[in-house]
Length: 114
Image (cartoon, rainbow, N blue to C red; front, side, top):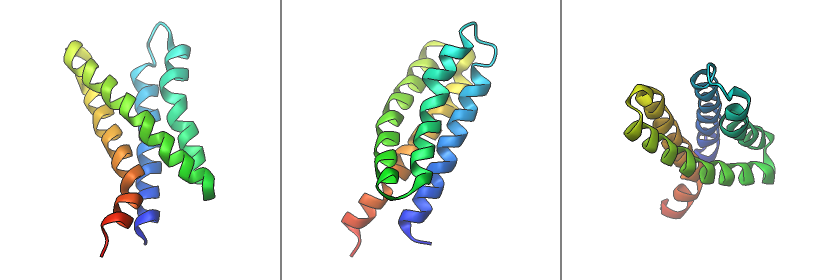
């Protein structure tokens, strides 16, 4: 399995897990639909782009990495400010870091391989 293929699998799993995390996190929220549209839908859209392959996968990887910076920041903010949601927030932080690493791994591998 090449670095690109394995990072694509890790990225797909992390994006799916992130959307599932958001679905469970916000299932009892008063504004559930809005929360799911803002949080759970973007990872699923990025996942669809990554799974399509070709140039769309490259764009999906890019946008997943960009969005993961937002997800990471959101997780840190929630973990710091709302101790009751810290478990969900730490899950979001870990998955966002997995998305960032997996989205950038092919480029890093190409740059630093000898």
